[in-house]
Length: 303
Image (cartoon, rainbow, N blue to C red; front, side):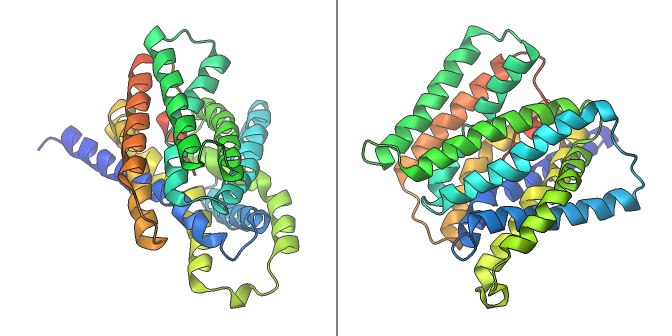
C-alpha cells in the first residue's frame, strides 16, 4: 500500500473519531444538565477547556495571533464558547438528545448560509433548494414532535444553531491563518478572563455530591466536545482531504441517536431516523452544489 493511501486511510479514521466525539455532545450535555445548571455547565466547561488549551499553547510555544484576527476570535468566542453551549444546555433540559440530533443535523446548512452571506458566494440554485428543504424538514420535525407547536426546547435549539452557524463560519475563515485546533484553543484562552470567574460564581455548592453520570457528562463536553474533538477532526481533514473526510460528518446524527439510546436510555423511533436521513440527504446535496469557496468543514460540526 502506498504512503499516500495509508495517509488517507489514517485521515479517514481520525475524521471518524472526531465525528464520534462530536456526536456525543448532546447526550453528554443531556446527562450534565440533569444535575448542573446550564449557566454553570457553560462556564465550567469553558474554564476547563480553556486552562487545558493555555497549557498546550504554552508548551508548544505558539505565538499570539496577529492583532488583525482578534475581532474574529472574539466574535467566535462569544458564539461558540458562551451562547451556543448555554442555549444547547437549556434546550437539553427540555427535549431528548435524539430530538436535538435531528435539529442539529441541519447545522451545516445554517453554517453554509452564513458563510455564503459573509463571502458573497453565488451557489447554484440547487444549493438554495436543498437548504430550504433541509430547514423545512427540521421545522416540520419539531412541529410534529411538539403536537403542532414549537416547544421552548426547540426554540433554544434553533437559537443555538443560529449562533453556532455565525461562530463556525467566522472560525472557518480563521483556519486560513492557523490550524483549526489552534483556532479553538485561542478562542478558549480568550474566554478565560470570563469563564474562570463565571465558573467560580456558578459552581454548585454540592459539586462533590452530584451523581457520577452528570459529572462524566460535564467532563466529556468540556474536554472532548469543546476541545479534543477538534484535534482528531482537523488532523483527519489535513491527512485525508477535506472533501473526502467531511462526508463522514453525515453520520453524526445517527451516532448521536446510538449514544442517546445507550447512555440516556432514549427510545429512537423510525420517525426520528427517517427525518434525520432526509435532513442528511439535503446536507449532502447542499454541500456538493455550494461551490468552491466553502469554509473548512472542520468548523461545520457542533461542539
